[in-house]
Length: 534
Image: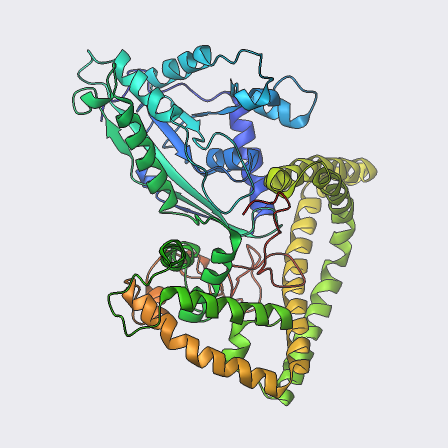
């Protein structure tokens, strides 16, 4: 692969600081950040355009900066909307310190104002010719929506312009590195994230003459469509939240709760069902050639009814799959309640330090939510939580050092350890209390209702399995996913994650369900879009 003689621009000290700082901050905010395919990222000196879906505002850029290994890329040249620059805010300072290039979006300016990005594009082309990597979000803007917006053609046009400028250089190559980012619940504390780097597409003036100027715009559109398809292949892409909700239920019926599987495998299984349900809803016909099988569309409707009933009762499918007798329910409630009490008691001293951070962040986010509709504000909630949490956390840390100045050398290290241990105890305590609450609700459901749900599931299960096999999923998911994938398998740690602890891990919560968040209830529903759109 053609490598620039310069080996790429060295990262600035401010960029290195931001990368280290927010790797730490993101690892606290999100429970697990699982990264796949870093070996696909072109090495330093190879001109590369890195593109990804954009659903979480500035957090998306921070996620990319912190998950690209240093030995692969010195620096990701970032872009951001021009309205983020020149403000007296921490976010503005952060963006400018990272060497971010401003992009002028037409929708941010009045109809009569001129919007010219030619100078910006020139800077990006120069960076690429130096062997740098440029990060772009081709959707053109962030939004709280389950689907990927139609991609703008700017990335394809930039790639075409760079190839055209170097058409006489036989050794010039440029990589298009696609990435898919999947947030289980992007705005929720201690939820999980999957970042997948796909295999890059390599372009040269010789092998891609169709992209040299004067270029046929159909080729630009075709390349943009190809980008959309690759990014979509690694994440959830749906016209509304309901299909994702139903697909997660189908995935959980197919792969029982507690199965050892990586976050990546969980996302791919869910996405496989999502694509099948999406196709059936668009065409309203069964994609299966087996006409004796109930249609996928009908299965979707029956699963939705079943999930609605589970949500109404506040229980999981697993409790229908494996019903419990009342004495066992009482016994488990005692264990869960007792364990939650112990963990909450252990975490209480450290939670005193966390309290100002939680209160500050809650007030800031609560005020921000009132500034606009869900689709235009919820994508920035994580950004607000990260920003206000980080600033208030520094203040708390500084105050602890100030008030314990005589022993500051001790508190310098003790305060972070205490806060982390408190968070881990509290996180597992919330999970135990959530299980206690679910058992309490299960106790009051009643045998007739549970029997009705059990019969519904008995009808749904073979249909879900049949669809899974039809879609090419493994016949024995429990055995298959226990063996495949990497080390981070949620409930039980493997390889370097192994240890003697069976009920508690210092490093992270060993989840039975990748859908978990730091909530006293299971998050299975999504905010209703108050804009009136789907």
